[in-house]
Image (cartoon, rainbow, N blue to C red; front, side, top):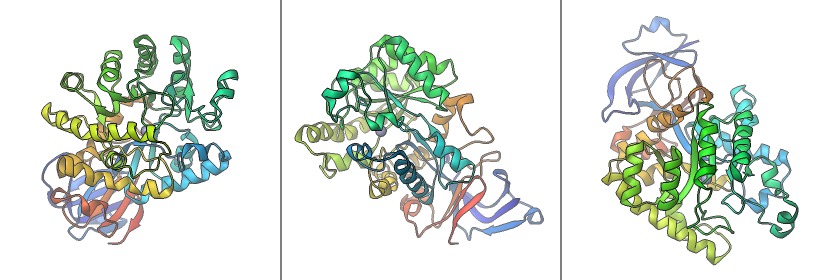
Length: 419
Ligand SMILES: [Zn+2]
């Protein structure tokens, strides 16, 4: 199968200007030529009508299996969770997200179904279970905590493989290796207090340096890296020392840790849209203590954005962290607009394409998609692309608006075409 896209301008995922009036040759699932393409090669021609071809969107922080608040997920059968997850995944692809990194959830089966054509959704880089210390951010035994602590019984949600508790070097090593065994392309661990969890104050540092190093060692021996949920500067300092390479949220920075992040090339995945919602108390949480924690991180994230600018941290990626119903997951695209407001259009576009591509390459041979580049429009890249009416460099609203987002292609297959 060869497809030629004609009459296109290209945003390649990196540069601040479009490559104008070119054609793209797509052979099966890979872009093989950009420029003047011989149309006689085409079995199918798509006229972009002067629209912008850009890389498919990428989200580095999703929870596909979390289609409801945790206490509701606890009551669902596994089939229910799986079917709902498939619906969440389909929604992501139809918003233009062609690759996502799942950072807590048993997504391997869904990933396989999508890759083999039994379900519709983005490419998935699974982390499988997020690993937490006892009384850490994802020790979700909180419903009936007393009974569960007495006999060390995981909650139903933990039993689905979304979260795993491990303490001490040997348990951490085993937990990391279990996730790798289950197909994780990177490891997610909880390195400090959480805003949405009940038992761990925000300022807690979770995992000793030794335990965290154990996770990093087990991951790097398998060619990959650790991504850590983390809010405070002190927790970030310890994680940086341990060799953690992806800071999720990274909300409460100071100058010292911002410098370290820059020097070590650590990736930062903020979520400005979700932060603005929680700072304004627009997400129902149930109790005042949780509101106070979330308000604090929600406000801090915007201050940290100033440090990201001050130290010119380029390793920043788009991540949404949506947990909840389909309506919550639908807010995924709003983050692009939020980033544009905090930074600028080009930064937002790079964060949602090529920067994620670079982050995901840290999975080396554990990266599930090895045939081409992701997050770029270049020769040799996967044919994961959008055609947008308008120039996204002049404002990202044309990317998120379903009217002007004309075509969605993943792996060379067209999922939407309103050209
Ligand atoms: Zn998360």
